[in-house]
View 1: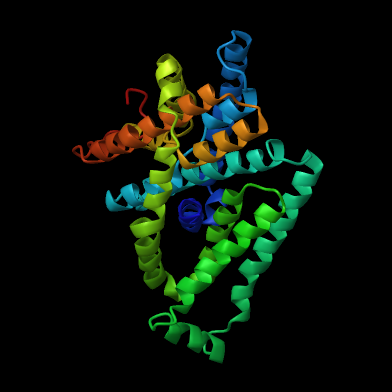
View 2 (view 1 turned 90 degrees about the vertical axis):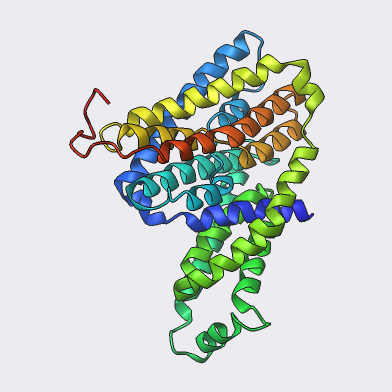
Length: 338
């Protein structure tokens, strides 16, 4: 149960970092274009692999190869200073798309109900999230309620932190009631929370970091590690290597192309490495697919194992690239020689 709360925190913090206004800008449009391209390529490649008898599940494996572990990466990217400026906006946009869109597809196509029912449930949850987001406008600055919230956030009441936990649990419970994946509810809770916090943001963020990254999130990954099927990976190690290469190529290469002329070569590589890093959605995806019988345990273990490798290696490479000397200012961003 504690691990499930930790997984909820991973997606809540990821949703909180996403500014929906990004998707009206160039950063959001390019993030959508890169993910759609990655997913199209993944479907084609996995279809060939299935025809060759190497994999059995088309959609789950294709989705697994195109997810991004934004929630896992946030503390690393923030501490490395990669979330500031133009690069930060592109990293958040491409990471948010790579985390949210696979969750939506999982909810519609891999859930335990029909697609029409899943779409109706998804619409209902979205309406609830919008309604919760609009509640913030009902608390006027200077009102009695606003004063109580502001005073209580620093006292033993910890109103803002408790309200965040209540919001997380409510939306997770609602999505579970609608037979949608609970991680969708956690992600929506983060989006709603961003609309709520206002001037309390810096204080609340430090508390969420302490509670989430200090306790619940580590439990989530310890529990996931305990469930990793090492015997299945050992029985087919080349499958893990295949999935790892495909994650790098299918997720990273479209990013390198889409951001050409927008980001310098080094930042394009950093964005590609971050985009190809996957784990939390991968864990949820494989659990759902195995439970529904659409994915074998061997494929699931190899996908999660490849995701573990990406989390261990790719963020470190992105941070190392950021520490290299700054490129000459006279070198044009869109120069083909780069």
